Amino acid sequence: MNSKALKILIFLFTLNTITFYLYFSHPNHSHSPENHHSLPENHYSLPENHSRFPLSKPWPILPSYLPWDQNQHVKNQSCEGFFGNGFTRRVDVLTTLPKISRKGGWFRCLYSETLVSSVCEGGGIRMWPERIRVARGGEKVDTVMGRSEEEEVPVFEDGAFDIGSSDGSWRGKKLVGEEFLHQYVPTGEIKRHTMMELIDTIRVVGDDELQCSEWVEEPTLLLTRFEYANVFHTFTDFYSAYVASRVTGLPNRPHLVFIDGHCETQLQETWQVLFSSIKYAKHFSGPVCFHHAILTPLGYETAMFKGLTEKVDCHGASAHDLWQHPDDQRTARLSEFGEMIRAAFGFPVDRHRIFKPTSSHNILFVRREDYLAHPRHHGRIQTRLHNEAEVFEAVNSWASNQQEYKLNVINGRFAHMPMKDQVRAIQDASVIIGAHGAALTQIVSAEPKTIVLEIVAYKFRRPHFALIAQWKGLKYHPIYLGGSYARPQVVIDELHKIVRSLEW
Ligand SMILES: *[C@@H]1O[C@H](CO)[C@@H](O)[C@H](O)[C@H]1NC(C)=O
Ligand SMILES: *[C@@H]1O[C@H](CO)[C@@H](O)[C@H](O)[C@H]1NC(C)=O
Image (cartoon, rainbow, N blue to C red):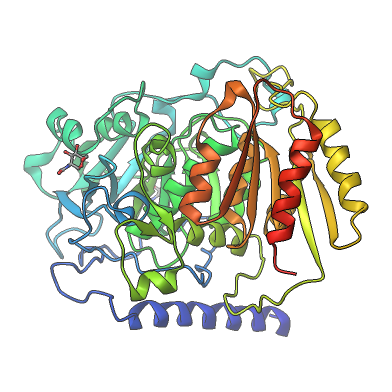
C-alpha cells in the first residue's frame, strides 16, 4: 500500500473515532438500559459468503448535528417529532434466542406517532429479485423512452422477502398480520404504499433454509421511490433515507438498494455521494441475504412533504441554541441534512468559518430549463415565469452597473449542471432568486444567512420553498405575480432592498 493511501486510511479512521467520541461524550446521550439502542446481542458470526459491496463511508462531522438517540419524551407534533427522531415506539416482532442460531433473523419497527409511520429493521432477511416484478432500473433515460410508470413500481410476489427463524412455531407464517400493518405502517392517503406491501410479503422460514448467493454484511437501506425525477420529491427520499440511518443508530453510512425500476437521473449523483453504495434490486443475480436491512419510510411520509398539507409549525434554529434552549417549535435538522449533502460532496461545513464582511456577494439566479426528465417526459417544462430570460438579463445588467456594491450574478442553469456544481453555487450564494420550481429545493444546503427571493406565478402559489426557508431559518421574500409575467423593475427593486440588507 502506498503511503498516500495509508495516510487517507489513517485519516478516515481518526475521523471516525472522533465522530464516535463526539457522539458518546455528548452530555444528553442516553445510557439508560431501556433507551439503549443497539442491535440484539445475538447477531450471528460472519457467514461464509462475504458481500462484494465496497467498504462503508464514515459519517462526516456536521456542525448542526444533534444526537439522534431514542428519547421517549419527544412530544407528538414537536419539531423533533417531525424532522428528527420521533420514532420512539419500539415494537419487536421477531427476536432470536441468543446462541441457538447463527443465522436467526430478527425484526422490529420504530413507530412515530407524529409522522404515523415506522422505520423497520431486521436481520437474516432474504430478498428474491426474481419474485419482484419490476423493470431492471438504472438505465439511461433515452434507452427506455415510453416505459410506463407501472413497470417501474415494484409488485411483490408472495415470498419476495423472507426471514430466518430458529423458532419452529413461526415457520411458514407471515411475519406480520394486517392489523400490525394497519397500526404501524398505515397506507394513509398514499395510493400504493410499496414499503407496506414489501413488509406484507415477508414470510418466516427455518434459519437452516436461508441459503443465499450473497450475504450483505453491512447495514443496507431498502428503499422504494416515487417521482424520482423531481428534485423536490427526491429530496424527500434523501431525507427519509438519512433519517432512517440515524434513527437506527448506524455507525457508518449504509449501503442502499433501490427496490424499484426507475432509470438513472441527474440526481443519482447525490444518492451516490450520500450513501456508501447504491444498487438496484434487479441487479442482484440470485437470492441475497441482509445481515442488517433497514426499511425506509416513503418520501411522502416525511415532514418535508406533509408540511404541504398539514401544519408543520417549525422554525430553523442553530444546533448550538437548541442545545442550550431546547424548543419544541424549532429545529436544526434541516440544516444538519443540508450540511450532510455538502459534506458528502466534499465541501467544508466548518461552523468556525469566520464570516467577515465580504467585498462582493453572489446572486444566484436558478433557471428553469427544458430537459428530458424521465421516460414519460417530452422534454418540455411548464413555464412558470414567461419572461425569465428578460428578468435574468435585467438583474444581470442592474448588478453590473452597481457602483456601491460588487455583485456577481450566477446563471444557475441547474438542469445542465452536475449536482456537485449546483450545491457549490447554492452554498456560495448570498441571495438566491428563482421562479417556483423544484430546483429551489437545493436551498436546504444554503448558508444560514442566505436570502431567498422566489418569484411565484399565480398558478403556482404553493408553499414548498417558503416552508424550507422557514424550517431552515432563512429570510424569504416572495414576489406574487398576477399571471406568469414579472415586471423586471419589480424584481430589481426587491433585490435592491435585499442587497442593501446584506453585510458589507
Ligand atoms: C398526535 O397529534 C395529532 C394532531 O394533533 C393527533 O391527531 C394524533 O391523534 C396524535 N397522536 C397520538 C398518538 O397522540
Ligand atoms: C455461497 O455462494 C454460493 C454461490 O455463490 C452458493 O452456492 C452457496 O450456497 C452460498 N453459501 C451460503 C452459505 O449461503
